[in-house]
Length: 200
Image (tube, rainbow, N blue to C red; front, side, top):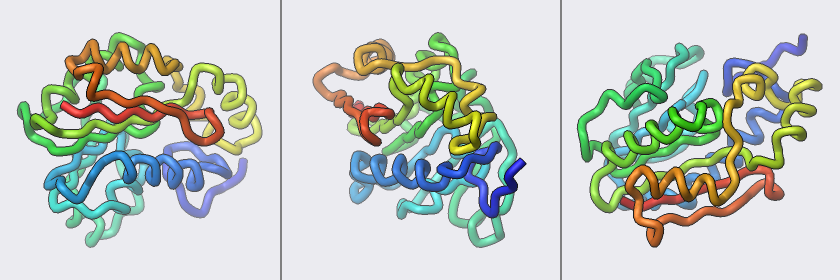
């Protein structure tokens, strides 16, 4: 098996760092971080690369897996919480200005994805922004083929439980409480991934 020099996810894929950077770039454009004081990144990953790449006074990452490769300076710049976002967010209501879930909801069955999105709505402050990314429904066979050859992580793709369309993503967000008029959805990476921006 190919051994990575740096890992973003628990598994290894030749394109993982590139794909992670593309998700981060899209999220930064949508987050409107200049007006934000606090940011929660759900499923921040084996290495919380996105949190480490953004400037925000209060940065919190949550993941159910342990982190590795973080030095003391990195740990001091953010707060990491080990918990399963699929069963709830251990934060008070209206705690965060911004919340991200980059390449996370596809790992949850639909009922848990819906519950997590409702939790995001709860922990967001009024006017707060939620940004998520997820593979499109039609990208599944492509991802599974790429995983066989370690272009993307077989461990991560093997855990995918739900693939979304723009309509199902909109329905999930509005079902959680977001106003349809304040939700935007689109595609990126040649249509392989969806993005959504929802304002509370």
